[in-house]
Image (tube, rainbow, N blue to C red; front, side, top):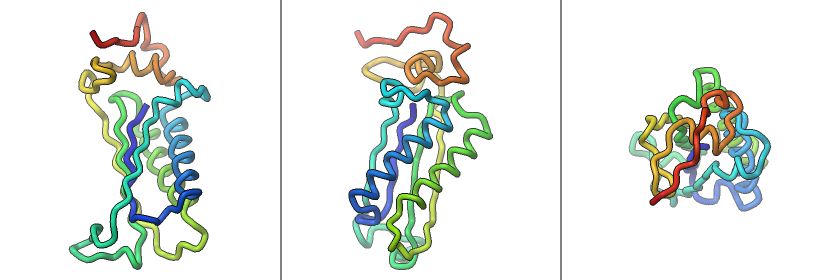
Length: 158
């Protein structure tokens, strides 16, 4: 149940390529976080695409986007969902998604920065209520965390 923000230069991924990228990022999230193949569970994977205007992406103060295709992806997940192996797999899957979705004519070197951030338990609000790991596990169906559920119910805002 991640929130994913993917940033890259404007027009780097034309419409059909952006659609492929979003699909692959959803698949990466489902694999790394062990979300079952259930549309209701996968609906909780939010992805925002942020295309950066020309001249607004620099490396060392220099716009290198003519030579390099820089892509930054920030993934926020509830703390406790990923172990070290799942985190490493997630980063690899996101890099592979960007490489696969890029147009075949793209000649710039792909340069990715993927940051996976754990949101501390009790720090994530959804629909006006604080959610904790058992609520996330119930909602997203994390296969490896089902034993943590107990009597977890999804919180509702008052």
